[in-house]
Image 1 (tube, rainbow, N blue to C red):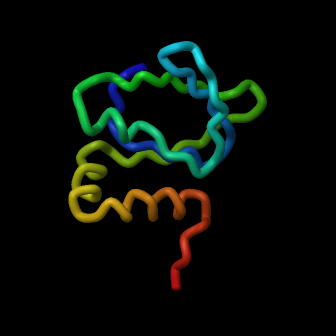
Image 2 (image 1 turned 90 degrees about the vertical axis):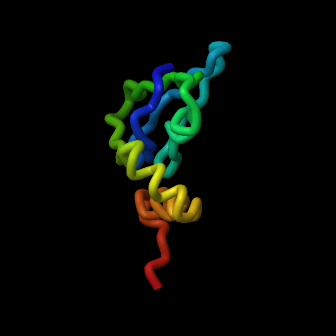
Image 3 (image 1 turned 180 degrees about the vertical axis):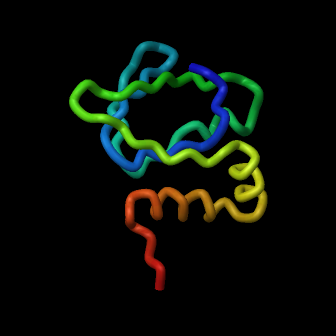
Length: 91
């Protein structure tokens, strides 16, 4: 994988995540990724690609904004994931 330049949230479609040992997992809408490699200097051990069945739509939060939000409150990251898939309770 590559070093992420932000946190990403899959808002539509599917991705296939491939680990360092060749294991694969289907990633569905609402799942966040990339934040792990923002905490260190190592590239992500995971590679991602869209499935052939459907296009993937991804929301990106740049690394600088991610780090500012995490410093404020880690719950902000979870709220972003809920907003991305329409699960956030605005009340």
